[in-house]
Image (cartoon, rainbow, N blue to C red; front, side, top):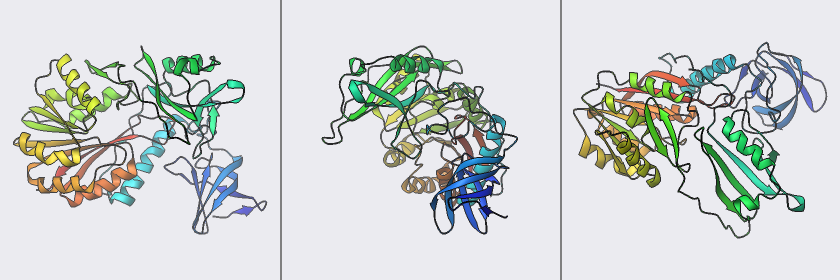
Length: 419
């Protein structure tokens, strides 16, 4: 592929693919260029912002030949705000490239090459779906308060008064904040920057001053744990605190859980171990598919809400424990195991620890299968390689676009225990 240096600072490139982070990728004489703002099929003029021996990073200066899939980003902050990476790409094509990036990462990192990846399930709402966003507040001149999102790979604040991927109730709250000249009347005085989360269930919206810190003293606020949100998923109503994890896209969540349910066919006699169980969302939802569900969750507040959700929905075959999965799994498994055992893993973004994989290896003859949920495909690929060595082979890969307009997506993998 040829290239033409037009000035000492810019280079003309032909983009042939899209990286997981959303950058366009070009290859010239063995060197890889990651170009922000460029799409596959485009010819662009780009400015080099970082150059290494084998790769370089660049920003699009001019689009010489646009992609047929390029669209006008509806958000006026796109390109400055770090929240979205793909608003300039038609939604159907976002799904295509998320599928390709998942296939590539699973093959390269996890050596998962012999099974087909299902098509990415789209979100019913490509915009206006997020039930949680995180704002940053900071002091400005004359006692004013700035609010916004952080720029990509930067601590620079991008002032905003709306977010296109947030639910309408959150945008109403953002607009209300933008009109207030003295936000300290809302949140009290604060030092440095204030991390503010806005969380909604479509009816109630809460402002959570999650962390205010003085960079000199390190002083921090403490979150108020008294607020409650409610979501009805598949006929079951869940209560949860804004301070605990809950999936941000409630519109696609019912289909995600239903799809996991299809993986539990012929499991009426099984015990489902719901590891990293949170407020019980998946385990409680699928309790009618198995003999019993055993949850294990480290976060004590989430554990308390799991107990509430079990009681309020009158579920009689779900039992939840609190503690670190890595240290408590063996004890809980030995106490609750059945003739057939299935593990459901929904770990934090960093994945599962090697010590836990060793536990799975120890009990491999007694574990029928593992269902693994992840929103970080590179970590998922790493863990699939570890689990394969422990005797669990991936059989199906199901991606779901829980995060339209961004590089992120959710993946569900079913692994079977080798005989």
